[in-house]
Image 1 (cartoon, chains in turn orange, purple, brown, green):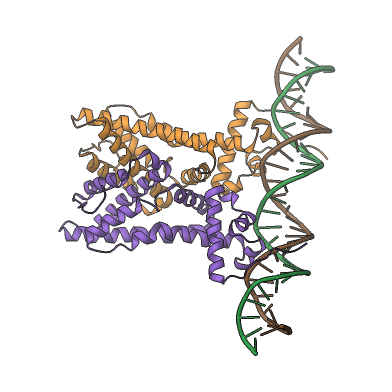
Image 2 (tube, each protein chain N blue to C red):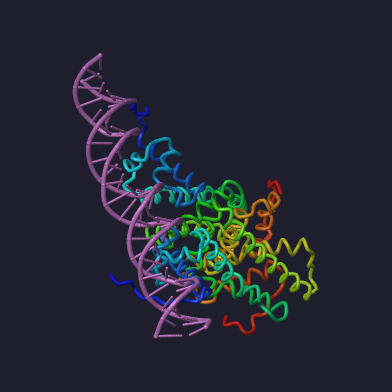
Length: 209
Length: 209
DNA sequence: ATGGCTATTATACGCTTGAATAATTACTCC
DNA sequence: GGAGTAATTATTCAAGCGTATAATAGCCAT
């Protein structure tokens, strides 16, 4: 009866690995397939270790959800350049890999469905959502201002809702049925649609479309 | 040790009640809270009865998913009147109760997340999705034709994707944060945005906006 | 009114779950 | 290089899961 060998990892690394393993399990088997034992197998450790780093399973799920939201939003929120470039890159980033793929949707949907019945997850969601929409509202404000168009708070809010809705919806379609679209087709639809929504043209120079 | 009394219900009624109970459980407790015992409690029967009507729990979940999809799409797919009215009603129906509310999203997200890892549910999803988008594509074709605008297959397909994306996204926002929007605000945004996408005006006569 | 059919209840079974605790071993520090 | 520490493994536990089967009772035909 010999024990399996192991190595002692730094806390940050171990926590990271366990969260990644959790996300892998959710993407592969769904939320109900993300058991402590399955997560442990994915991470190459034994189940008991999870409780050493996370008080309960709820806790590791919350941390995992934060990571999911961060991955979905962090790159888009960090666009740089002039207003038009930032807006355009924001759109492109949200509708291409790695944000738009089936794994993203699996993870997002799993957590969203649980967020409806779990206040802690709901709070994490709202935080990420508002941050994202605020970022978009800011981008629109700067873009419209530079064009000398109406950039009132009210208009920006409405447009942010509409553009956010459009991006969410196209993201959804891309995740659910990405293979039905040609490369960059979604991005092209998004740019054309947003041009129509804003009443402005968006330069496509430098895009692969 | 006296048994509880009961009444023998017609099969169709019992199956319907059990499916409703399943949806109630999912909306209230999430998928993992929809256990056969909890479903039975909601339906006012005992757990064993579920297996009398559904071979496995998988089966009742599949039936329940069909009901969810039907509720999300059936009313919108049955709009009547001239092309403009049909298109407008399609939009309104999708962005107001009972399609747009938090319960709808809870149910939808729960099943979508599971559909990613369950082929049977994935098939049910795709069937419903394609039907919905085809209906929209038809509406757009009729609407654009009547206006004498370009209604080519390629353009209708692109517009259907964009409009579907917009509706999905606004639906999502309405479900997730309905209380952040004023009454009919989402519908108004949708109509304005779709006018921009189509390059056509949509008469709002008869709407409460 | 009653006998038979079957919808329904009741109970049990084997498994898996999240969690708790005890035993061990890899690594740090002196 | 040996002792101490705590990260990790191993084991256990009660609860809840889906499923299976036996017992019961509501209801319909006669």
